[in-house]
Image (cartoon, rainbow, N blue to C red; front, side):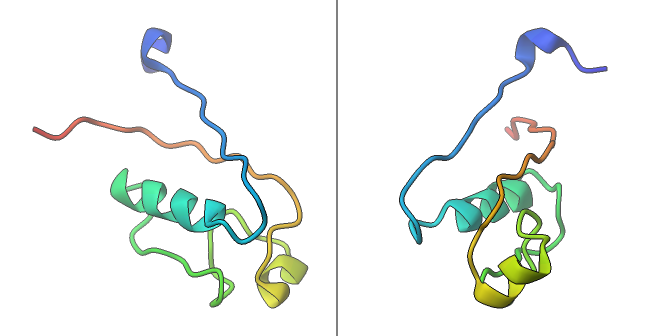
Length: 73
């Protein structure tokens, strides 16, 4: 297990259509937790897994994702 001293929890709270899901996808992509960015309009993001979320292009339930961030020098 990684050292818990370096563990951070972050959350995104903002108005509807402000880009929370897109920001989450970008962070997961930059952390190399996913190999390609998903699209809200495409219905293929990591955090919007419910069929209704994918069809409507909105987030209905909150999601939690886990990834490891390494500083690249």
